[in-house]
Image 1 (cartoon, protein in one colour):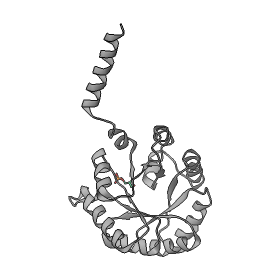
Image 2: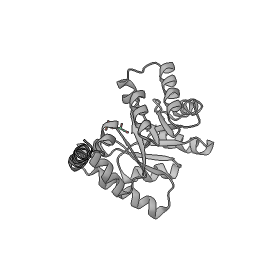
Image 3: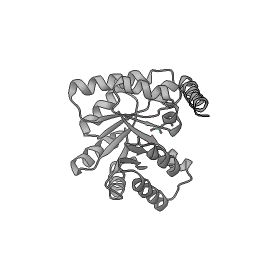
Image 4: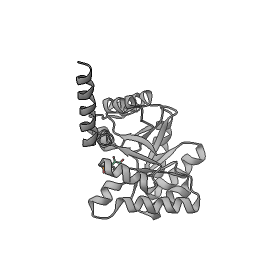
Length: 218
Ligand code: G3P
């Protein structure tokens, strides 16, 4: 399973990259706004900065919701760098645009996916990545991880090549369960990735090793 970081923070992207486990980045308009990035030129420049940090794919989301607008915006985003993936919402015009991008060889990430039916449409349109939002499904007391399992089963049966990118990940447990459920990729906040490191027995064991070494060598 690949690890993407879900942020527009250059510092967090660099920290995840330095860990040696980073395969890509996803952003969205909310995450860009959180970093205070606004204005078309600043937004485009920020995407370029991200692509200069990471070798893997970087999802840059369109704002338009009509076919012509999505295609125009997506083509411009795709020209920023070879590793830009155009992130397109799961709406009717979005699916049409994904088909156009697919035919033009532009990689896409179909976002705001909440049902197996939507996952089939995105795969049929040729989306490179599919982003089911686990945490937001859990938020309304449905089972986000069941959604990943259902999509993974459908994609395996049908031989769809679209990669399942589990998104709206909120915790280390989400990451572990996404891995068990058949996600190809998880995109997570840095905090959730670093949370995977934690185990009290690791801390206790390390403390004891270091204490024993110190006693034996003093
Ligand atoms: O990748 C989508 C993600 O950014 C949404 O996460 O926590 O806002 O539901 P969240």
